[in-house]
Length: 98
Image (tube, rainbow, N blue to C red):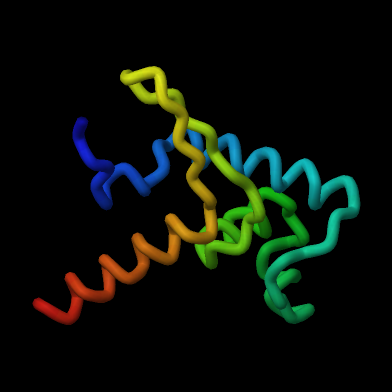
């Protein structure tokens, strides 16, 4: 069996869109924010739930899990927080090597 690699931890554009859309719906229904935003930052984002959800996603604060069906009929759960932190670390290491 093939071991899962770091590339498997990245989200597809569809997974990202689903997480941001779901979180934006939660925010629009009055759910608490998972990021600290000042009044000025909220004004800049125009209190738009989609933009707030994007900020949460970029900071790895969206508390959602993705369940992927793998070809070998196994399932794999990916946590948004852990995967985004791993991607951030990879980006930082690439920037440091440049």
